[in-house]
Length: 348
Image 1 (tube, rainbow, N blue to C red):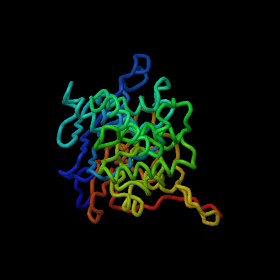
Image 2: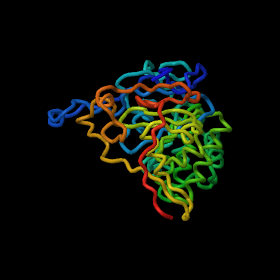
Image 3: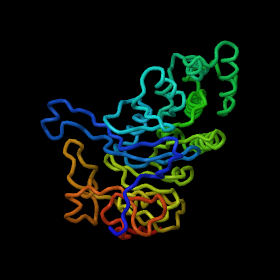
Image 4: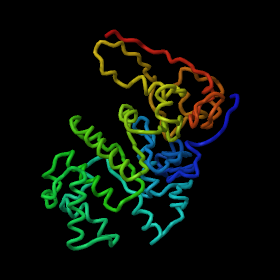
């Protein structure tokens, strides 16, 4: 590939969060290990940067490893290998009080607003728990801070004493967001924050998260399968497949000029809100590979219409190429060739 340059998204010294060669392998029980691999490589060498004030959209099919990446960054699960740098500090090397201090700066909004809230705690107790644990506020000051947070996310201070079951799904997610911003973090992971909500409230929640990101200068990792959300709210995009990132770049470049066949297939599946338009779709053949028996070479080659012998033996690096837009990188041996997918055109 002419002019290829191996790199990661941004490569900026100003990145607040820098993930380097992150891996998470889950050991298999013996009866499953005998059928193939002894580990499932849920995340296998992921790297990217997120500067302060920007949102990176991490997209891909279910099972691609997106949620595992988010939880590994926050050390909700322990990574197998790699580096996670937060403000140039390796989070994986921290223990005890030092780790606790960094965790104040890194928070998460979970996918399920029901499962993520303790049904035995009131909204005030849920939102204020972090403030108490980190000894930021207590007593009347705690109550006032929680009331202010409730109002900031669009709820009333009168809702503070309600239990999760009395709230709607959108209201529960607002409580989860209030909890996430209570300690004034600098980085938030949003794991499918609206997928469990009614369509009528999804945009409200996304606008709230975007407003908070702008006013507080937050770095944000938005994990989602919805590319329309990515196009509207993300500055940069990283596309995952089978535990690896296969394409990265600015949202503008990814949507205007996708280079990886998998990215093109995802974009072709985005619905067009026009009943009179012709739909051009590429339907991926086959299924996501079996993690107990992963394919050799490029993990996408069993489903790729352009795969050749090299794809079946060599794993492509995530690289740039001659003429690529800044920060646009693709893990494909033929990224420098704009290969058209065989699409099916449906009548309006």
